[in-house]
Image (cartoon, rainbow, N blue to C red):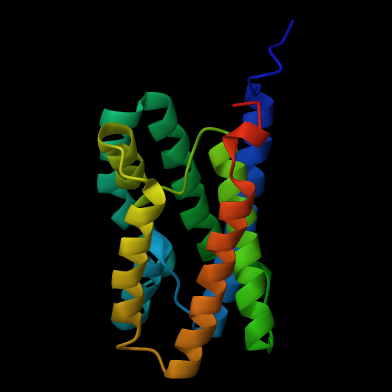
Length: 200
């Protein structure tokens, strides 16, 4: 008899695949609008904008050292799921613009849509034992080892990234970018509670 508190392999595959697709769609909207965001995605977007590099390559390369940290401190299972997730997301974000062409989008709606899509994507992946890697990994390590809440670490990272974004984006684009990032953070704050979710 299966344990209702554990996900099966098939459940993990579909949950992580769902998260990857939602995240790729969110990033497609983000880059289409020229927005920025926080965390590793935001850093990759800024480097891609300033260096005229493909987001998919930058995002995957940034994640590699964090994956090593995850393997060492958080375990092989978590690191492998995160590697699969980040690699698949990198590939899909490269392919998606060829499959889906976006036209004009109202900036406020685009910001909200990005935040919701990326929030539900992160929630799905985390609930199935993985992550989108990056700064979330050292944030979890600091929380587990020193009791520093992961949210505070991630907030500090976001402040640095948005400060850098302010140097290259116009004020209006920066404002909409902040709305998208705030929507994402609020979505996770409301929905990511382990006491409301049994399976792992």
